[in-house]
Length: 341
Image 1 (cartoon, rainbow, N blue to C red):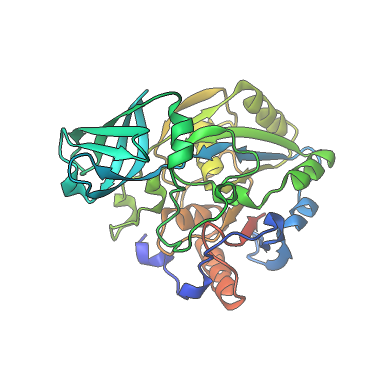
Image 2: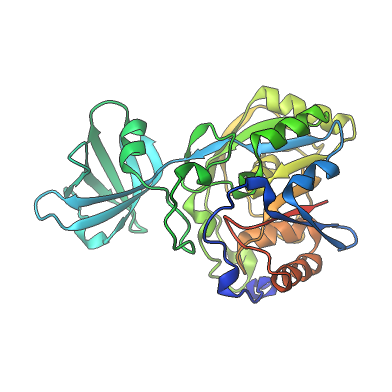
C-alpha cells in the first residue's frame, strides 16, 4: 500500500486551534465498520452506544510540560529544549533548537537559575542527552518553568494547561496528550459507569514520534517509533472478563488501541505487562483485542489514519473523512471525535 492511499484534502481552517470549553460538547461521527454508514451526534451521546458489560479502555498518561525556554550560561543566547525521554533520574533525551548552540559540555539556565542543564552527548539523530541540576523535585520545577508541548499545527497559546490533559490523567510521562480522551468529563464517565460499563485504565506514554510523517512511499517500509506502556493485573482481569462474557472492548484513542494489540495474545487475552511497543497497524492487520474505537480525526498520510483504516476499512474511512471535511468537523488534537462501531 502506498502512503498516498491515505491522503485527503483538508482546509487549514478546519484544524482546531483551541479546546472547547465543554469537553463533551464536541461533535461525534458514528462510523459503522461493517456497512460504512455514517451518523452525526454530539460526544456526550456516546453513552447511548455503550452496553452494560462492555469495557472502555482509557490511557491515564499525563503530559509533561516538557517545553523549556532558557539561555546559554555564558552568552545568554536563547535556547528551546523539548524533553523526549527520561534516561535516568536527571538525564533526559531532548530535542534542542537551535542545535548548534548545544554542543557537548555547553551549559544552559532556565527561569531564575532554578534549573540548569549540561549537554552530555549528541545522538546520531541530533537529539541531545542532557543532565539537569535543580533543588527539590524535578516534576515540580518543570511544572513551574515548562510549557505544554503542543503539536506543531497548533499555533495559538494554551491559556489553561489542564485543557491538554484528560480528566483522568495520572501517570506523568507523555510528550503529547492521548487526545481522544480529552472529550470525557468526570460527569460523563460517572454516567457511563452507572450504566454498567466497565472502565479500565492502562498507561502508554505518547512520544513525539506520533506526529512524525511517513516519509516512505510504500507504508511497509516505515519504521515506527517506540513508546513505553504498562498494564496492571486489575485492568487485565477486567478486559479478560469482558471478552469471556462476549461483550465489546472499546479502546479510547489509538494509544490504548496500540497497547491492547501489543499485549493481546492470539486467543484475545491480555496479562499484566509493561515494556516498549513499536507496533505499526495498517490495513491487512487482524485485530485481536479491540472491537470498537473512539478516536479523533487524524493527519493525512499518518500512521494513525492507517490504524483506523485497518479497523474500519480504508474506503469507509476515507469516505468518512471526506464527509467530515464537507460537514466542517474540527480536526486533530482539539478537534471532534469519531466512534467506529
